[in-house]
Image 1 (cartoon, one colour):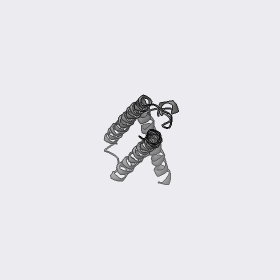
Image 2 (cartoon, rainbow, N blue to C red):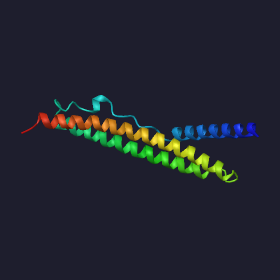
Image 3 (tube, helix red, strand yellow):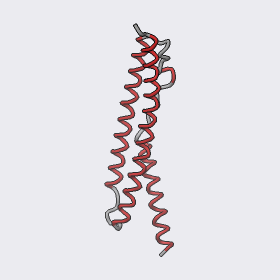
Image 4 (cartoon, helix red, strand yellow):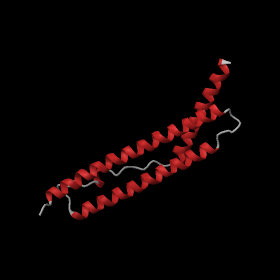
Length: 132
């Protein structure tokens, strides 16, 4: 019986990895704006700051599309859980999928917050340099 449960657990882990790979293949992780897209606020012109703001908005939109895609992929994978599996196995599979979604979503949001924080620091520097 132990061998059978080990095989089942291994199969579930492989299936979770496959689902995670499928989700990452369908959902393209957005590239963060590079340093040249985030102007040095202490030296930047108003136009450069506006261009930086537009780059940040575009990046945030891409992050939103990515996290929406992850949620759609998650929901599709949950819908494909074999209903003939015992309830505890179905619940375990869903928990694995939920965990993968949470990890990928949190990583994307954390990355966006980091980049946004860098840009906000440059806005503060710009405002300090251009006080009237």
